[in-house]
Image: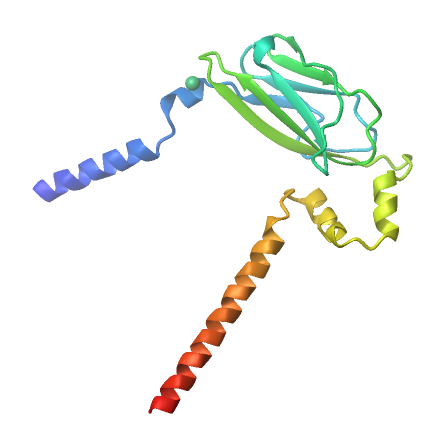
Length: 186
Ligand SMILES: [Cu+2]
C-alpha cells in the first residue's frame, strides 16, 4: 500500500514537472504570417506581416528580416495594428532564403520570440551577385552555403562530424595500442 502511494506521488510529481507551465497557454503566439512559414515565393515580397493571438504592444514588437548569410535586410520600423505587426522591406529582395525573427510581448508582459524561414525564387529575377561570384571562385566556405540555405544555418554539424571522427580515430588507435601492449606483456 505504502509503496503504491509513493509511486503514485512520484508519477503525479513527474507529471507536474513535465507539464508545460500553465501561464504558457496565456502567452502570445504567432497565428499566421505573410510570407508564410517555409513558403517558396515566385515573386519577392515587399512586406512581412505577422498576426498574433493577442494584441501587440507597439513599443515591444520587433520584426527582423535577415538573409541566408544572416545579414539584416533593411526594413522600416514595425507598425502594429491590433494583433498584427508589419514591416515594409526597403529594397527589392533578391532570390534566396530569408529568416523572419520576431519578439513580442504577451498580455501578461512576458516576451515571446520565434523565427521562421521563407525562400524567394523568382524565375525572372537576375542571379544575385553573391551567387554568381560563388559559382566561379573556389572558396572553401562556399561548400556550406547550400546546406545553410536548405536547412539550419549552422556550420556546426560538419565541425562536429570532424571532431567526432577524430575522437573515434583516437579511440581506435588507443584500443589498438592497448591490445598490442597486452599481447607483448603476455
Ligand atoms: Cu507569462
